[in-house]
Amino acid sequence: TPQKNPAAAGKNDRFSSAGFILAAIGSSVGLGNMWKFPYITGKYGGAAFFLLFIVCLIVIGLPVLLAELAIGRAGRGSAATSFVKAGGSKIFGRLGLLQIIAPFLILTFYVIVAGWTLHYAVQSFSGHLYSNTDFSGQFSGFIGGYMPIVWQVIAIAITGFVVVKGISGGIEKFNKILIPGMIILLIVMMIRAVTLPGAGEGVAFFLKPDFSKLTTESALVALGHAFFSLSLGMGILLTYGAYVDKRQSLGAATIAIGAGDLIYAFVAGLIIFPTTASFGIASDSGPSLVFIALPAAFSAMPFGAFFGGIFFILLAIAALTSAVSLLEVPVSFAMDRWGWSRMKSVLIISVLVLLVGLPSALSFGIVPAFTHMGSKNFFDWLDFIASNILLPVGGLITTLFAGYFWKNAAEAAGLKSAWFRVWLFTLRYIAPILVVLVLLHTTGVIRF
Ligand code: PHE
Image 1 (cartoon, rainbow, N blue to C red):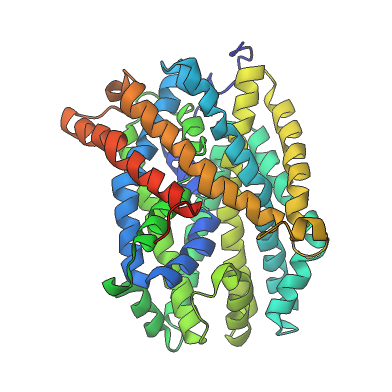
Image 2 (cartoon, rainbow, N blue to C red; image 1 turned 135 degrees about the horizontal axis):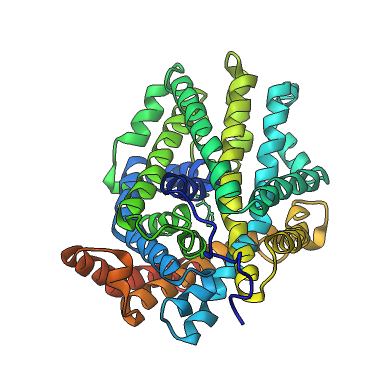
């Protein structure tokens, strides 16, 4: 029976209004913005892709984001239980379980990459990173060893330590300190990047659209990334919504969160592309871009160890504020559904995150069984299943619920009638169709 625990999700611990927006921005700004966004932008058409991403974010992303927040606040439960408490049928409560499992799975590998960024920050500040310029060898040597497990444990410990302190005393405080710090570091890095010799070429690549490069595929990638980047379909905003005061305007919060995510991606582009252009690095060099290509650039610039260290701290902050939001989802579920205390939930789930994550941490060479599993390693399989299947399916459940099965949608979202009709139309027709297309495309069912 739900609600055994008086301290459970949404019961009395609340976000302040600014704290909520910062925490939601902290969740949406993550490795996706600095690590994934630049290389897919490089690959799928630079500025033209960026414009497409903006359109997807505004037209599809924001309406779904608002739906998640509204369901969470109306239900005041966890991602799964809120569907039922907000007035849905039991079936949605069951389907909602997917939005508990998905963030758990993502968290298992997300903290590993968060650990890598911490390791790289230390290595950069200490100068060790630059003592040998074979950056590719250094990276594969590091991720192919046992050290990442140590950093994984550290990253989980930090995440658990924040979540155990609850919403206002933990998650909100953490984001209130780190997000302003992150903005300062981001500006420092942007100024450094755009003043590098030859930076202009990178800025032009990022800001001058060439629409001939756009394909149906880039459109689907842009939409998928808008979902990932806003942390949709993962129960996160459903969970955070449960802790939002009922007087707060969800429409305004949605716009603030979307703007925060977009501005961060924009500035990240102004850091990565000028830097890669200045040092003649291919901007589409893939996921290894930030761990292999950028250290090469840092090693060649004055005070590079310092700027490199700052860059990896930025990545670490972005990753940890997202990790905190991922952990809160299963934690709030355990509290709400099983009546566990916050402490017990955080401890048990963190240990599980560590254990389930071990095969991912060991998938880069050291354990062949995890390294070679068909076309991918364990880590990439988990990422693929979570990001490309569970996340769109989760988003679909939310849109269908809010669009077709939820009687109190208008009131809960707090929209005026004209906006409500636009919102409902998007949730009913546009978002589900496009999300299904993304799903079919990323799973290889349809090809272009
Ligand atoms: N939005 C985060 C990012 O851009 C990642 C994330 C995805 C976090 C899904 C939680 C859920 O990196």
